[in-house]
Image (cartoon, rainbow over all chains, first blue to last red; front, side, top):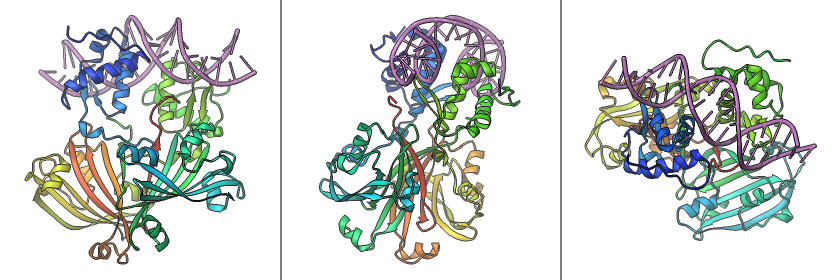
Length: 245
Length: 245
DNA sequence: AAGTGGTCTAGACCACACA
DNA sequence: GTGTGGTCTAGACCACTTA
Protein backbone atom coordinates (compact mmCIF):
# COMPACT_ATOMS: atom_id res chain seq x y z
CA UNK A 1 0.00 0.00 0.00
CA UNK A 2 2.91 2.34 -0.63
CA UNK A 3 3.48 5.02 2.00
CA UNK A 4 3.24 3.73 5.49
CA UNK A 5 1.99 6.90 7.10
CA UNK A 6 4.26 6.78 10.16
CA UNK A 7 4.40 10.20 11.70
CA UNK A 8 7.15 12.23 13.36
CA UNK A 9 6.93 12.44 17.10
CA UNK A 10 6.18 16.07 17.94
CA UNK A 11 3.60 18.76 17.37
CA UNK A 12 -0.02 18.41 16.43
CA UNK A 13 -1.29 15.67 14.19
CA UNK A 14 -2.16 18.05 11.38
CA UNK A 15 1.34 19.56 11.48
CA UNK A 16 2.97 16.17 11.31
CA UNK A 17 0.67 15.17 8.45
CA UNK A 18 1.50 18.38 6.60
CA UNK A 19 5.19 17.55 7.05
CA UNK A 20 4.75 14.05 5.70
CA UNK A 21 2.78 15.26 2.70
CA UNK A 22 5.42 17.87 1.98
CA UNK A 23 8.37 15.50 2.30
CA UNK A 24 6.97 12.28 0.92
CA UNK A 25 4.49 13.44 -1.68
CA UNK A 26 5.16 16.94 -2.96
CA UNK A 27 8.83 16.21 -3.56
CA UNK A 28 7.91 13.31 -5.81
CA UNK A 29 5.23 15.06 -7.81
CA UNK A 30 5.23 17.75 -10.47
CA UNK A 31 3.29 21.01 -10.37
CA UNK A 32 -0.39 20.47 -11.14
CA UNK A 33 -0.21 16.75 -10.31
CA UNK A 34 -3.16 15.66 -8.25
CA UNK A 35 -2.89 14.52 -4.64
CA UNK A 36 -4.86 11.67 -3.10
CA UNK A 37 -8.31 12.76 -1.98
CA UNK A 38 -8.86 13.99 1.55
CA UNK A 39 -10.76 10.82 2.37
CA UNK A 40 -7.93 8.61 1.13
CA UNK A 41 -5.37 10.60 3.11
CA UNK A 42 -7.53 10.35 6.22
CA UNK A 43 -7.58 6.57 5.82
CA UNK A 44 -3.83 6.36 5.16
CA UNK A 45 -2.94 8.42 8.21
CA UNK A 46 -5.66 6.97 10.39
CA UNK A 47 -7.13 10.35 11.27
CA UNK A 48 -10.40 12.11 10.63
CA UNK A 49 -10.94 14.05 7.45
CA UNK A 50 -11.06 17.37 9.31
CA UNK A 51 -7.51 16.79 10.49
CA UNK A 52 -6.34 16.14 6.94
CA UNK A 53 -8.11 19.32 5.91
CA UNK A 54 -6.23 21.28 8.59
CA UNK A 55 -2.95 19.87 7.26
CA UNK A 56 -3.85 20.77 3.68
CA UNK A 57 -4.94 24.25 4.78
CA UNK A 58 -1.42 24.98 6.01
CA UNK A 59 0.03 23.78 2.70
CA UNK A 60 -2.44 25.95 0.79
CA UNK A 61 -1.48 29.00 2.83
CA UNK A 62 2.14 28.33 1.93
CA UNK A 63 1.27 28.12 -1.75
CA UNK A 64 2.44 24.51 -1.97
CA UNK A 65 -0.90 23.10 -3.09
CA UNK A 66 -4.22 24.44 -4.30
CA UNK A 67 -7.79 23.15 -4.16
CA UNK A 68 -10.46 23.00 -6.82
CA UNK A 69 -13.86 22.19 -5.46
CA UNK A 70 -15.39 19.09 -6.91
CA UNK A 71 -12.10 18.15 -8.53
CA UNK A 72 -9.20 17.66 -6.14
CA UNK A 73 -6.09 19.00 -4.46
CA UNK A 74 -3.14 19.76 -6.73
CA UNK A 75 0.56 20.49 -6.39
CA UNK A 76 1.32 24.20 -6.66
CA UNK A 77 3.93 25.66 -8.97
CA UNK A 78 7.48 25.97 -7.69
CA UNK A 79 7.80 29.65 -8.62
CA UNK A 80 5.42 30.62 -5.87
CA UNK A 81 7.72 29.46 -3.11
CA UNK A 82 9.77 32.66 -3.14
CA UNK A 83 8.76 33.67 0.37
CA UNK A 84 5.67 35.78 0.37
CA UNK A 85 5.27 38.81 2.57
CA UNK A 86 6.50 37.65 5.94
CA UNK A 87 7.66 40.30 8.34
CA UNK A 88 11.44 40.43 8.22
CA UNK A 89 13.96 42.83 9.64
CA UNK A 90 16.90 44.39 7.85
CA UNK A 91 19.15 42.02 9.77
CA UNK A 92 17.20 38.94 8.67
CA UNK A 93 17.07 40.26 5.11
CA UNK A 94 20.81 40.67 4.86
CA UNK A 95 21.60 37.35 6.50
CA UNK A 96 19.27 35.67 4.01
CA UNK A 97 21.28 37.24 1.19
CA UNK A 98 24.54 36.06 2.70
CA UNK A 99 25.63 39.54 3.72
CA UNK A 100 26.90 40.64 7.10
CA UNK A 101 24.63 43.35 8.52
CA UNK A 102 25.80 46.07 10.86
CA UNK A 103 24.75 49.49 12.09
CA UNK A 104 26.37 52.88 12.55
CA UNK A 105 24.43 55.00 15.03
CA UNK A 106 24.10 58.59 13.93
CA UNK A 107 22.05 59.81 16.82
CA UNK A 108 19.87 58.46 19.60
CA UNK A 109 17.84 60.71 21.85
CA UNK A 110 14.75 61.14 23.88
CA UNK A 111 12.28 63.42 22.12
CA UNK A 112 8.77 64.73 22.66
CA UNK A 113 6.40 63.45 19.99
CA UNK A 114 5.56 66.14 17.45
CA UNK A 115 2.40 66.13 15.37
CA UNK A 116 3.38 63.66 12.68
CA UNK A 117 5.13 61.24 15.01
CA UNK A 118 2.42 61.41 17.66
CA UNK A 119 -0.18 60.74 14.98
CA UNK A 120 1.61 57.72 13.58
CA UNK A 121 2.33 56.27 17.01
CA UNK A 122 -1.23 57.08 18.15
CA UNK A 123 -0.01 58.89 21.27
CA UNK A 124 -0.58 62.42 22.61
CA UNK A 125 1.57 65.21 21.23
CA UNK A 126 4.47 65.69 23.64
CA UNK A 127 4.64 62.07 24.79
CA UNK A 128 8.19 60.97 25.51
CA UNK A 129 9.62 58.94 22.67
CA UNK A 130 12.89 57.31 21.76
CA UNK A 131 14.37 58.33 18.44
CA UNK A 132 17.18 56.36 16.84
CA UNK A 133 18.84 57.28 13.56
CA UNK A 134 21.12 54.61 12.16
CA UNK A 135 22.95 53.87 8.98
CA UNK A 136 22.44 50.22 8.08
CA UNK A 137 25.30 48.48 6.34
CA UNK A 138 25.80 45.17 4.56
CA UNK A 139 29.39 43.99 4.38
CA UNK A 140 30.39 47.56 5.32
CA UNK A 141 28.47 49.12 2.41
CA UNK A 142 25.74 51.57 3.41
CA UNK A 143 22.37 50.25 2.32
CA UNK A 144 19.81 52.32 4.17
CA UNK A 145 19.33 55.27 6.48
CA UNK A 146 16.82 54.49 9.16
CA UNK A 147 14.81 56.77 11.43
CA UNK A 148 12.94 54.89 14.14
CA UNK A 149 10.59 56.30 16.76
CA UNK A 150 8.87 54.44 19.55
CA UNK A 151 7.20 55.41 22.81
CA UNK A 152 9.71 55.65 25.67
CA UNK A 153 7.18 53.66 27.66
CA UNK A 154 7.76 50.76 25.30
CA UNK A 155 11.53 51.06 25.32
CA UNK A 156 13.33 53.95 27.02
CA UNK A 157 16.51 55.36 25.53
CA UNK A 158 18.59 54.18 28.48
CA UNK A 159 17.49 50.59 27.89
CA UNK A 160 18.38 50.48 24.19
CA UNK A 161 21.41 48.59 22.96
CA UNK A 162 21.87 50.71 19.88
CA UNK A 163 23.97 48.37 17.81
CA UNK A 164 21.61 45.43 18.15
CA UNK A 165 18.25 44.50 16.68
CA UNK A 166 15.54 46.84 17.92
CA UNK A 167 12.86 44.27 17.09
CA UNK A 168 14.51 41.75 19.39
CA UNK A 169 14.70 44.28 22.19
CA UNK A 170 11.07 45.27 21.72
CA UNK A 171 10.12 41.59 21.84
CA UNK A 172 12.11 41.11 25.06
CA UNK A 173 10.11 43.88 26.69
CA UNK A 174 6.89 42.05 25.84
CA UNK A 175 6.13 43.99 22.67
CA UNK A 176 6.71 41.57 19.87
CA UNK A 177 6.05 43.02 16.42
CA UNK A 178 3.26 41.12 14.73
CA UNK A 179 2.12 43.26 11.84
CA UNK A 180 3.55 46.18 9.92
CA UNK A 181 1.83 48.57 7.58
CA UNK A 182 4.28 49.93 5.07
CA UNK A 183 4.04 52.70 2.54
CA UNK A 184 6.62 52.46 -0.20
CA UNK A 185 7.48 55.46 -2.30
CA UNK A 186 10.44 56.89 -4.18
CA UNK A 187 12.40 60.12 -3.96
CA UNK A 188 15.51 61.75 -5.29
CA UNK A 189 17.98 61.87 -2.41
CA UNK A 190 19.08 65.18 -0.97
CA UNK A 191 22.83 65.78 -0.93
CA UNK A 192 23.34 65.01 2.74
CA UNK A 193 21.57 61.67 2.65
CA UNK A 194 23.23 60.75 -0.64
CA UNK A 195 26.61 61.34 0.99
CA UNK A 196 25.75 59.13 3.96
CA UNK A 197 24.59 56.38 1.61
CA UNK A 198 27.65 56.89 -0.58
CA UNK A 199 25.68 57.36 -3.80
CA UNK A 200 25.85 60.24 -6.29
CA UNK A 201 23.77 63.34 -5.75
CA UNK A 202 20.46 63.05 -7.52
CA UNK A 203 20.26 59.28 -7.12
CA UNK A 204 16.90 57.64 -6.45
CA UNK A 205 15.95 55.92 -3.22
CA UNK A 206 13.07 53.92 -1.91
CA UNK A 207 11.31 55.49 1.04
CA UNK A 208 9.58 53.06 3.35
CA UNK A 209 7.33 54.41 6.05
CA UNK A 210 6.43 51.68 8.49
CA UNK A 211 4.10 51.43 11.47
CA UNK A 212 4.44 48.21 13.45
CA UNK A 213 2.09 46.85 16.05
CA UNK A 214 1.78 43.90 18.37
CA UNK A 215 -0.82 41.20 18.01
CA UNK A 216 -2.93 43.19 20.45
CA UNK A 217 -2.81 46.18 18.12
CA UNK A 218 -0.48 48.29 20.24
CA UNK A 219 1.68 50.48 18.02
CA UNK A 220 5.30 50.02 18.97
CA UNK A 221 7.25 51.64 16.17
CA UNK A 222 7.14 54.30 13.51
CA UNK A 223 10.03 54.22 11.09
CA UNK A 224 11.00 56.06 7.95
CA UNK A 225 13.84 54.46 6.06
CA UNK A 226 15.66 55.46 2.88
CA UNK A 227 17.01 52.52 0.89
CA UNK A 228 19.55 52.81 -1.89
CA UNK A 229 17.59 51.98 -5.02
CA UNK A 230 20.66 50.57 -6.74
CA UNK A 231 21.10 47.93 -4.05
CA UNK A 232 17.68 47.29 -2.65
CA UNK A 233 14.20 46.37 -3.84
CA UNK A 234 11.08 44.98 -2.23
CA UNK A 235 9.39 41.76 -3.12
CA UNK A 236 5.73 41.38 -2.34
CA UNK A 237 3.16 38.75 -3.11
CA UNK A 238 -0.45 39.72 -3.46
CA UNK A 239 -3.43 37.45 -3.88
CA UNK A 240 -6.95 37.90 -5.06
CA UNK A 241 -9.40 38.50 -2.28
CA UNK A 242 -10.72 35.23 -0.84
CA UNK A 243 -13.61 35.42 -3.37
CA UNK A 244 -15.14 32.53 -5.31
CA UNK A 245 -12.30 30.27 -6.35
CA UNK B 1 -30.67 38.11 26.11
CA UNK B 2 -29.80 41.05 23.89
CA UNK B 3 -28.95 40.13 20.34
CA UNK B 4 -31.48 37.87 18.75
CA UNK B 5 -29.14 36.12 16.37
CA UNK B 6 -31.39 36.34 13.32
CA UNK B 7 -29.31 35.74 10.25
CA UNK B 8 -29.34 37.20 6.74
CA UNK B 9 -30.72 34.95 4.10
CA UNK B 10 -27.86 34.07 1.79
CA UNK B 11 -24.46 32.41 1.78
CA UNK B 12 -23.03 29.93 4.24
CA UNK B 13 -23.86 30.00 7.90
CA UNK B 14 -20.35 30.98 8.91
CA UNK B 15 -20.38 33.90 6.47
CA UNK B 16 -23.70 35.14 7.78
CA UNK B 17 -22.46 34.80 11.35
CA UNK B 18 -19.27 36.71 10.49
CA UNK B 19 -21.46 39.45 9.00
CA UNK B 20 -23.61 39.66 12.11
CA UNK B 21 -20.60 39.78 14.41
CA UNK B 22 -19.05 42.51 12.28
CA UNK B 23 -22.20 44.63 12.10
CA UNK B 24 -23.76 44.09 15.49
CA UNK B 25 -20.79 43.53 17.74
CA UNK B 26 -17.57 45.02 16.39
CA UNK B 27 -19.21 48.34 15.62
CA UNK B 28 -20.31 48.68 19.23
CA UNK B 29 -17.03 47.67 20.84
CA UNK B 30 -13.65 49.31 21.21
CA UNK B 31 -10.32 47.84 20.14
CA UNK B 32 -9.13 45.21 22.62
CA UNK B 33 -12.61 44.67 24.04
CA UNK B 34 -13.37 41.01 24.48
CA UNK B 35 -15.98 39.16 22.46
CA UNK B 36 -18.31 36.49 23.83
CA UNK B 37 -16.68 33.08 23.95
CA UNK B 38 -17.01 30.72 21.02
CA UNK B 39 -19.32 28.49 23.05
CA UNK B 40 -21.60 31.41 23.92
CA UNK B 41 -21.74 32.54 20.30
CA UNK B 42 -22.53 29.00 19.21
CA UNK B 43 -25.47 28.97 21.64
CA UNK B 44 -26.69 32.41 20.57
CA UNK B 45 -26.63 31.56 16.89
CA UNK B 46 -27.81 28.00 17.37
CA UNK B 47 -24.91 26.49 15.49
CA UNK B 48 -22.01 24.26 16.38
CA UNK B 49 -18.82 25.69 17.77
CA UNK B 50 -16.85 24.73 14.64
CA UNK B 51 -19.11 26.98 12.59
CA UNK B 52 -18.50 29.90 14.92
CA UNK B 53 -14.78 29.20 14.63
CA UNK B 54 -15.02 29.37 10.84
CA UNK B 55 -16.74 32.74 11.13
CA UNK B 56 -14.12 34.05 13.53
CA UNK B 57 -11.35 32.74 11.28
CA UNK B 58 -12.52 35.00 8.47
CA UNK B 59 -12.58 37.98 10.84
CA UNK B 60 -9.08 37.13 12.05
CA UNK B 61 -7.79 36.96 8.48
CA UNK B 62 -9.24 40.43 7.90
CA UNK B 63 -7.49 41.76 10.99
CA UNK B 64 -10.80 42.62 12.66
CA UNK B 65 -10.29 40.42 15.71
CA UNK B 66 -7.46 38.43 17.26
CA UNK B 67 -7.31 35.34 19.45
CA UNK B 68 -5.33 34.62 22.56
CA UNK B 69 -5.38 30.99 23.54
CA UNK B 70 -6.79 30.37 26.96
CA UNK B 71 -8.02 33.94 27.19
CA UNK B 72 -10.49 34.97 24.53
CA UNK B 73 -11.20 36.67 21.23
CA UNK B 74 -10.65 40.42 21.10
CA UNK B 75 -11.51 43.33 18.84
CA UNK B 76 -8.60 44.34 16.62
CA UNK B 77 -7.37 47.88 16.27
CA UNK B 78 -8.98 50.08 13.67
CA UNK B 79 -5.69 51.12 12.08
CA UNK B 80 -5.24 47.67 10.63
CA UNK B 81 -8.25 47.94 8.38
CA UNK B 82 -6.45 49.83 5.64
CA UNK B 83 -6.77 47.08 3.08
CA UNK B 84 -3.95 44.63 3.31
CA UNK B 85 -2.31 43.15 0.26
CA UNK B 86 -5.22 42.25 -1.96
CA UNK B 87 -4.57 42.07 -5.66
CA UNK B 88 -5.93 45.21 -7.25
CA UNK B 89 -5.61 46.68 -10.71
CA UNK B 90 -4.74 50.24 -11.60
CA UNK B 91 -8.38 50.72 -12.53
CA UNK B 92 -9.64 49.49 -9.16
CA UNK B 93 -7.01 51.55 -7.38
CA UNK B 94 -8.05 54.77 -9.04
CA UNK B 95 -11.75 54.15 -8.60
CA UNK B 96 -11.13 53.51 -4.90
CA UNK B 97 -9.48 56.93 -4.70
CA UNK B 98 -12.36 58.58 -6.44
CA UNK B 99 -10.41 59.22 -9.64
CA UNK B 100 -11.45 58.41 -13.16
CA UNK B 101 -8.95 56.04 -14.75
CA UNK B 102 -8.20 55.91 -18.44
CA UNK B 103 -5.51 54.67 -20.82
CA UNK B 104 -3.62 56.03 -23.78
CA UNK B 105 -2.18 53.25 -25.89
CA UNK B 106 1.36 53.95 -27.05
CA UNK B 107 1.93 50.73 -28.90
CA UNK B 108 0.55 47.23 -29.15
CA UNK B 109 2.22 44.51 -31.13
CA UNK B 110 2.95 40.87 -31.48
CA UNK B 111 6.53 40.10 -30.48
CA UNK B 112 8.76 37.06 -30.12
CA UNK B 113 9.79 36.55 -26.50
CA UNK B 114 13.39 37.58 -25.91
CA UNK B 115 15.51 36.20 -23.10
CA UNK B 116 14.25 38.31 -20.21
CA UNK B 117 10.61 38.15 -21.20
CA UNK B 118 10.70 34.45 -22.00
CA UNK B 119 12.31 33.82 -18.64
CA UNK B 120 9.73 35.78 -16.69
CA UNK B 121 6.82 34.26 -18.58
CA UNK B 122 8.41 30.80 -18.31
CA UNK B 123 8.09 30.16 -22.06
CA UNK B 124 10.61 29.27 -24.76
CA UNK B 125 12.62 32.07 -26.31
CA UNK B 126 10.84 33.10 -29.52
CA UNK B 127 7.36 32.23 -28.31
CA UNK B 128 4.73 34.58 -29.72
CA UNK B 129 3.70 37.18 -27.16
CA UNK B 130 1.47 40.20 -27.01
CA UNK B 131 3.11 43.43 -25.91
CA UNK B 132 1.07 46.44 -24.85
CA UNK B 133 2.52 49.76 -23.79
CA UNK B 134 0.04 52.16 -22.25
CA UNK B 135 0.07 55.42 -20.38
CA UNK B 136 -2.33 55.16 -17.46
CA UNK B 137 -4.14 58.32 -16.45
CA UNK B 138 -6.25 59.43 -13.53
CA UNK B 139 -8.59 62.33 -14.26
CA UNK B 140 -6.48 62.94 -17.39
CA UNK B 141 -3.21 63.22 -15.43
CA UNK B 142 -0.55 60.67 -16.39
CA UNK B 143 0.17 58.42 -13.41
CA UNK B 144 2.09 55.49 -14.81
CA UNK B 145 3.70 54.05 -17.90
CA UNK B 146 2.91 50.39 -18.26
CA UNK B 147 4.62 47.66 -20.29
CA UNK B 148 2.70 44.41 -20.31
CA UNK B 149 3.65 41.12 -21.95
CA UNK B 150 1.66 37.93 -22.11
CA UNK B 151 1.73 34.80 -24.23
CA UNK B 152 -0.28 35.21 -27.44
CA UNK B 153 -1.72 31.81 -26.61
CA UNK B 154 -3.33 33.36 -23.53
CA UNK B 155 -4.59 36.44 -25.34
CA UNK B 156 -3.67 37.21 -28.97
CA UNK B 157 -3.16 40.78 -30.07
CA UNK B 158 -6.20 40.65 -32.34
CA UNK B 159 -8.42 39.77 -29.40
CA UNK B 160 -7.31 42.60 -27.14
CA UNK B 161 -9.53 45.58 -26.49
CA UNK B 162 -6.69 47.94 -25.75
CA UNK B 163 -8.56 50.61 -23.86
CA UNK B 164 -10.15 48.21 -21.39
CA UNK B 165 -8.94 46.25 -18.39
CA UNK B 166 -6.49 43.57 -19.44
CA UNK B 167 -7.16 41.61 -16.26
CA UNK B 168 -10.83 41.38 -17.12
CA UNK B 169 -10.04 40.17 -20.63
CA UNK B 170 -7.59 37.59 -19.30
CA UNK B 171 -10.27 36.39 -16.88
CA UNK B 172 -12.81 36.11 -19.69
CA UNK B 173 -10.46 33.82 -21.58
CA UNK B 174 -10.32 31.53 -18.56
CA UNK B 175 -7.08 32.91 -17.13
CA UNK B 176 -8.09 34.77 -14.02
CA UNK B 177 -5.18 36.34 -12.17
CA UNK B 178 -4.91 34.88 -8.71
CA UNK B 179 -1.48 35.81 -7.43
CA UNK B 180 1.14 38.36 -8.38
CA UNK B 181 4.76 38.54 -7.36
CA UNK B 182 5.96 42.11 -7.44
CA UNK B 183 9.38 43.64 -7.17
CA UNK B 184 9.32 47.30 -6.22
CA UNK B 185 12.31 49.50 -6.83
CA UNK B 186 13.09 53.13 -7.60
CA UNK B 187 14.83 54.91 -10.46
CA UNK B 188 15.48 58.36 -11.80
CA UNK B 189 13.37 58.72 -14.93
CA UNK B 190 15.01 59.11 -18.30
CA UNK B 191 13.98 62.19 -20.25
CA UNK B 192 11.62 60.42 -22.60
CA UNK B 193 9.63 58.71 -19.87
CA UNK B 194 9.61 61.86 -17.76
CA UNK B 195 8.04 63.71 -20.66
CA UNK B 196 5.34 61.10 -21.10
CA UNK B 197 4.56 61.23 -17.39
CA UNK B 198 4.67 65.03 -17.45
CA UNK B 199 7.21 65.34 -14.64
CA UNK B 200 10.54 67.20 -14.63
CA UNK B 201 13.66 65.49 -15.89
CA UNK B 202 15.51 63.81 -13.07
CA UNK B 203 12.35 63.04 -11.10
CA UNK B 204 12.08 59.76 -9.21
CA UNK B 205 9.70 56.96 -10.07
CA UNK B 206 8.66 53.65 -8.60
CA UNK B 207 9.39 50.68 -10.81
CA UNK B 208 7.12 47.72 -10.30
CA UNK B 209 7.97 44.46 -12.00
CA UNK B 210 5.08 42.04 -11.75
CA UNK B 211 4.53 38.42 -12.69
CA UNK B 212 0.94 37.25 -12.38
CA UNK B 213 -0.34 33.71 -12.40
CA UNK B 214 -3.60 31.84 -12.20
CA UNK B 215 -4.63 29.67 -9.30
CA UNK B 216 -3.22 26.76 -11.23
CA UNK B 217 0.17 28.46 -11.37
CA UNK B 218 0.06 29.35 -15.05
CA UNK B 219 1.94 32.57 -15.70
CA UNK B 220 -0.27 34.94 -17.65
CA UNK B 221 1.45 38.29 -17.44
CA UNK B 222 4.79 40.00 -17.05
CA UNK B 223 4.61 43.73 -16.56
CA UNK B 224 7.03 46.52 -15.84
CA UNK B 225 5.41 49.75 -14.80
CA UNK B 226 6.84 53.17 -13.93
CA UNK B 227 4.76 55.12 -11.43
CA UNK B 228 5.17 58.83 -10.77
CA UNK B 229 6.60 58.95 -7.26
CA UNK B 230 4.95 62.30 -6.57
CA UNK B 231 1.49 60.84 -7.10
CA UNK B 232 1.76 57.20 -6.24
CA UNK B 233 2.91 54.98 -3.40
CA UNK B 234 2.34 51.38 -2.39
CA UNK B 235 0.77 50.21 0.80
CA UNK B 236 1.61 46.74 2.04
CA UNK B 237 0.82 44.84 5.18
CA UNK B 238 3.19 42.21 6.40
CA UNK B 239 2.69 39.80 9.27
CA UNK B 240 4.91 37.61 11.33
CA UNK B 241 5.12 34.08 10.07
CA UNK B 242 2.31 31.95 11.44
CA UNK B 243 4.57 30.94 14.37
CA UNK B 244 3.60 30.55 18.03
CA UNK B 245 1.67 33.64 19.11
C1' DA C 1 -23.71 8.93 -11.47
C1' DA C 2 -19.68 8.94 -8.91
C1' DG C 3 -16.17 11.35 -6.66
C1' DT C 4 -14.36 15.61 -4.87
C1' DG C 5 -13.75 19.51 -1.81
C1' DG C 6 -16.80 22.77 1.27
C1' DT C 7 -19.67 23.06 5.09
C1' DC C 8 -21.72 21.56 9.38
C1' DT C 9 -22.79 18.86 13.64
C1' DA C 10 -22.32 17.42 18.59
C1' DG C 11 -19.62 15.89 21.02
C1' DA C 12 -14.41 15.26 23.31
C1' DC C 13 -9.76 16.23 25.30
C1' DC C 14 -5.78 19.35 25.55
C1' DA C 15 -2.84 23.50 26.67
C1' DC C 16 -3.03 27.77 28.31
C1' DA C 17 -4.62 32.15 30.94
C1' DC C 18 -6.20 34.00 34.97
C1' DA C 19 -8.02 34.65 39.32
C1' DG D 1 -10.22 25.53 39.26
C1' DT D 2 -12.77 27.43 35.84
C1' DG D 3 -13.07 29.12 31.38
C1' DT D 4 -10.85 29.92 27.06
C1' DG D 5 -9.23 28.92 22.43
C1' DG D 6 -6.81 24.81 19.78
C1' DT D 7 -7.24 20.32 18.21
C1' DC D 8 -9.66 16.14 16.96
C1' DT D 9 -13.37 12.69 15.92
C1' DA D 10 -16.88 10.25 13.03
C1' DG D 11 -20.17 11.03 11.01
C1' DA D 12 -23.56 14.00 7.49
C1' DC D 13 -25.26 16.78 3.54
C1' DC D 14 -24.27 20.08 -0.19
C1' DA D 15 -22.24 22.08 -4.52
C1' DC D 16 -19.34 21.19 -7.82
C1' DT D 17 -16.44 18.72 -11.48
C1' DT D 18 -15.83 15.01 -14.44
C1' DA D 19 -16.88 11.41 -17.18
